[in-house]
Length: 240
Image (cartoon, rainbow, N blue to C red):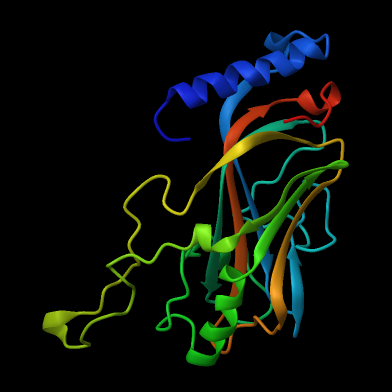
């Protein structure tokens, strides 16, 4: 998380109280600042929805845990404080296979840069930001439809903009000038548990082909910051 604020202190106290209400001693379940990073390669020819595997042992949507992912342990709990939705193009030698080394060089984007994503491809990927995100933990739906435009950040500095002349080289990176760049604070906050189903579904406006047109594999990345409780999933139930 960013600097500690009254919101963060209240969140920590609320998380500790969840354990107390469950008749458990919160000191026995170490609570630390942490994050989850959920990734899915966009390699199918058509998407109406995008879903991510959330738990470390899940392989339904994203496959095995990638080198840059951090999923929720099956016995742990995670209090979500903020969330972001990014896209990325991973440069690969043999698509759709992504090696750990190729994945580790991934640059996250907070908008569809038409100089990174080819023209037709960029128009299709924009459908992600015109969609909405549904969050459900166990049987409880915490967010029915978060508009994904909330996650869109188009900075002044944009990768590849500029002359190719040696004296005026193109900009090498998109703007990213704050720790919380692209992150949306969550209200209500909610607790994710490794012992129940955690469903994160991005509903697209229509069926879209989101594959990379050339030179890589496109990715959709959910980034969640908050508090992690080791083995906390064994004693807590879903709650706001």
